[in-house]
Image 1 (spheres, rainbow, N blue to C red):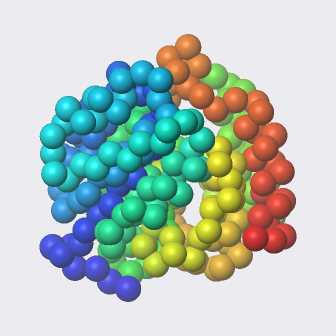
Image 2: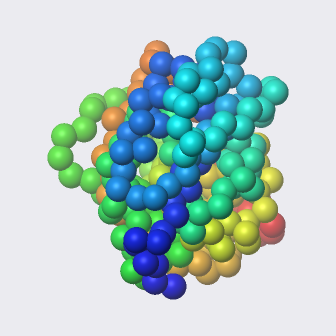
Length: 234
């Protein structure tokens, strides 16, 4: 399917948990992108002022959905996906690690009809990047390798935040995972259904754990198990 860019509605789903320091900057950067858009922020039971900061934006393109308690990224994505109305849906983290300036490149294979899903890869990009934890980067690559072995895909970055979907693809995904296991779940289900997947390089400025990064070793082991679970059955 080829989209008319002048009549395209982009839905941006932003899961947020205790991101009061960055969520407003992220939403503003999203609003500056050259697309007609709706922004759906899911406050996943934050204990800080994340929800209040979103309300302060006072923009009719921004909607806030609040979970009463923290449920995890997968639960927040499920809530956001069920609320969107756009033709194309993109996942955006609330922590400034990923630059919305990449949207034009991410949407390209979708708008011209070549892809059903696009992943934004942190490992295909060129140019300057921050030097961060070796084992975190290595863990991401090993999880991607493990996922590729079961899905028969050749992704370079399965765990990326930037996943972009035609809305029809999301209607075919009933997500089960509540936390970060949602990333391998999505990938394995896309592979099983043989949706056309593209990757494009994106800029990335990762946070350290001291700065608020939340994914940990427990999530890595869960991801290993989720790859197998969703590769063999839904």
